Amino acid sequence: MVVVFEGQLWSWDARRADSWVFVTLPEDESEEIRDVAGGVRRGFGSLRVRVTVGGTSWKTSIFPGSGGGAYVLPLKRPVRKAESLELGDVASVTVELLDV
Image 1 (tube, helix red, strand yellow):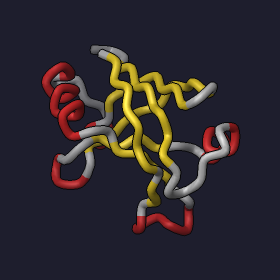
Image 2: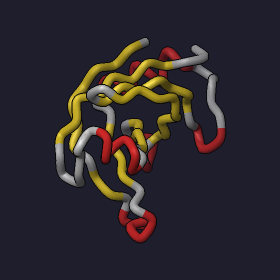
Image 3: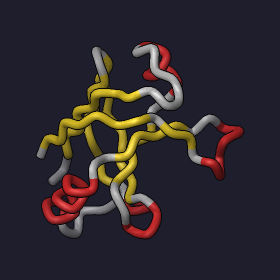
């Protein structure tokens, strides 16, 4: 399953000092991911994915948002730097589920 979307970068308030930056997947696609993934889950309910933002691709995990909401994708500093992205910017993101 591949999800292509645009999302705004935001910082996790609880870990602001550590610069944890995320983008939230759309609600509808998050529900579809739950259906497709079924019982496949790793630590913290994460799912392995391959991600592309601009010209940068890498493997990571997505995590269910608080209260079982939409999945969130962490964007590491090297990715943000390579793609000239800052908090509040909107990124074009492609997420491909692995292991489902």
